[in-house]
Amino acid sequence: MPDADGDGVTDQFDQEPNTPAGAPVDAHGVARDSDGDGVPDYKDKELLTPQKCFPVNADGVGTCPPTCCDSIAAGLISTRGKCNLAGLPSIQFKGRSIAISTAAQASLASVAQQLQANPDCKLNVTGHGASDKRAQQLSWDRTNAVIRYLVEKQGISENRFIFHYGTEGDPNTVDLEGTTEEGPNTAPAPNPQYQQQQRRR
Image (tube, rainbow, N blue to C red; front, side, top):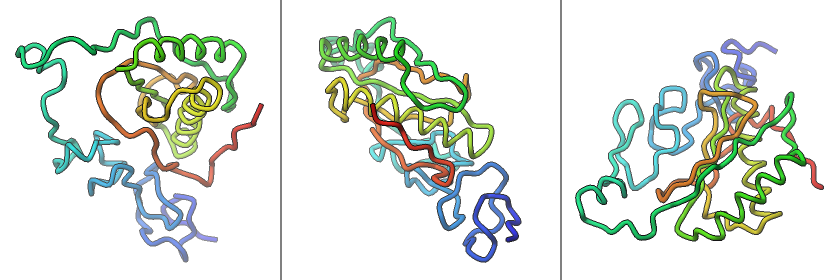
């Protein structure tokens, strides 16, 4: 069946038949807008803008209140509650696998201990891979796998995570970073037709 824009949705079902190459789309072929800010993901320079930062500019970048660090510098808030997570690992994956390796499990157990000891901290979980739709989806799958492991195997609350995927960087890693900022702890799969199912242990 013809698929003029090569987005994986055939022309007869494609509600947006001229999607740019590499743009993530939904099941109807419409360019995804993960954060609902009115700017499609392929144009959005801030893919998951928190709603508190709406409205956004033409690049999808929101206007947020001053960050905790700006407020600290201005003397408006105390540094108590500051996030002190340190030495967080990058979780490694092989090939196109989304399985959490034994080594990664040990690393994530250590991360969980730090999170439990620092209740004011949240964790940015960032997957990389922006080259094409399969890479974007694999990035999402791996980010999701790390969060699910920490929630289901280590007992960390879902609201402690901020979900990032499809960024530039090593596509075989998911990076972890402590933060006190807010953000979405989940995101819709960008290209579910390529989604992998995580194996249960």
